[in-house]
Amino acid sequence: MSQYELRDKPLPYKVWGQEHIDDGSLKQMDAAMRLPISVAGALMPDAHVGYGLPIGGVLATENAVIPYAVGVDIACRMRLSIFPVSPHVIGQRVGQFENALWNETCFGAGGEWPANNRAEHEVLDSPDWEAAKYLRTLKDIAYRQLGTSGSGNHFVEWGAFILEKDDEQLGLKSGQYLALLSHSGSRGVGYKIANHYSKLAQQLHPHLDASVKHLAWLPLDWHEGQEYWLAMELAGRFAAANHEVIHKRVAKAVGLKPAATVENHHNFAWKVQLPAPAGFAEREREVIVHRKGATPAEKGQLGVIPGSMADPGFVVRGKGVVDSIYSAAHGAGRQMSRKQATNTITKTERDRLLQERGIILLGAGLDESPQAYKSIEDVMAAQSDLVTVVGRFEPVMVRMDDDIKWGRKSKKRKKRKRR
Image 1 (spheres, rainbow, N blue to C red):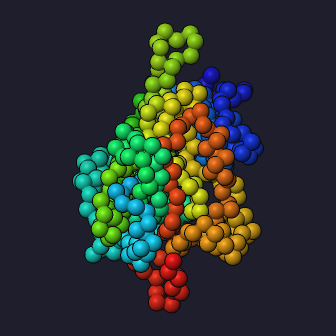
Image 2 (image 1 turned 180 degrees about the horizontal axis):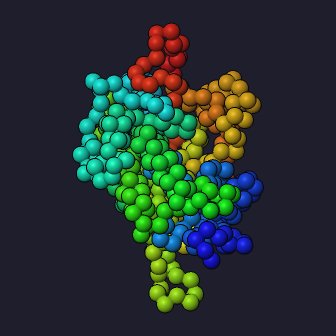
């Protein structure tokens, strides 16, 4: 098989929750499994159509990385901070908790902190910013956007974390705790890296079938592949720092420090040892595992799987299932496109549901309405063999993008009734 020739048929792969997955996602996954570099794959129950690889797709390749299979928001990530106080404190100090989200977060695709309010972090001192010519142009963006959140489904929210039994790994006793949950990635840094190296990969594979052009790859023994890998890992460290800054700022605003933290990427590529197929002399072989909207779930590994703004999220512990390539879903997954949600869900419908569930919403478009998402309970039930639920997060106060880059809304904003 040549470096461009696709397989006649896709390699077999396992699907979790197929009854919840649209045909377009299956078609995209089939195309990915026809690539000559693909060696294994899996599709998670939250899957829906993406660019190149479906969201919820897991793809293992041999000695090659696919920028678009990682995604444009490199290292999109979850972080949960759990505080040693009751979640009832939110109701007792609603204004303070609202102010913490309004004033200590910054949202939007181009959102950045003003010069007098920017954070410092050791990630900005990494020599890797100087390791490649293209990366040098991104350090200033990183400095301006450190501690910010994107648009779309990115959020920062207060809620209750319910732990049914003592957990040694978390270091917590059973009970209900105040928690802060965030979802964001590497911002403009990751977006620009993804587009730059995806275009480069397509240029280096001019004869690749047009149906899979977005899955053009960079061999890791090429200079371009090594450079992308370095850039991706730097974006991953930046995304982690981004969440760290957000949590420190918001927690400080309410005078609290966390007792435990759980976090993970879900748009990334990892070097993983997989059992070798029959006929291989070695028992294991190293592959490149792309998780495009999938949570790492190796045996004993903690991760966070969120629901929608009105639905619970879960802290899970991986079971290390090989057929899933040690992966699980990364959320509820969309059942409506953003356009469809905006055109069919009314503000009244959305707000009625939020009111019924006691959710305080600080900004968000109708495209992020809870009704636009699959049932997180169905998704979790479909992957009960992949993860064990450790604890449950119930949202109470949710901050998302509403075109306000930072700080409180104007005085014209209607005041929410205190509850």
